[in-house]
Length: 183
Image 1 (cartoon, rainbow, N blue to C red):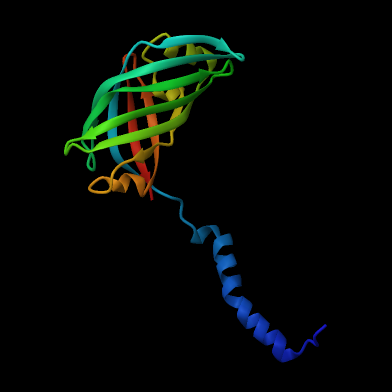
Image 2 (cartoon, one colour):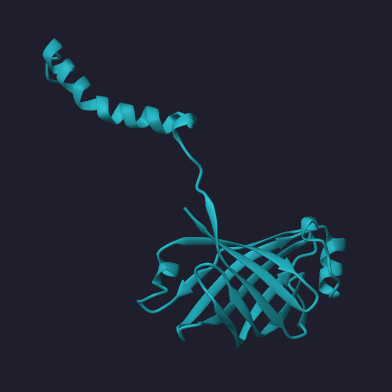
């Protein structure tokens, strides 16, 4: 074992000082800032009536076809293309697992594919009202997704260079999704 000297301890301490300062900064909540959210665009997505698969493994399964819609916002405008869909698993405890896949067409003609998994959570009686097609106050449920985008290099490739979250609002014949970029 090497002999510890005063000089050796001073050199080791000096070498560790930057790492210790970094750890101290990370541990200090005042030096951290939470990521921010910026509204990038909003989509109004029209839907076909649900196709019910029935109860499978204790949960209700269904598919809802996407029939079209519009996209508007400061960074993206266009339409929602028909042909996508939303696959849902509705659990008895009020959790709905959502997995939507669809495409947008920007005003410049760029087609943007979206893979959009998420959850909707509410009391079972609220889920029953939503499933029946009632207009329910969005404050009564939690509906969030984590979209990712498949887009060619060019004007809209910023969509694949950022992380997004979306807030969903379920209406009787459409869904409103507010897409936020995370800073």
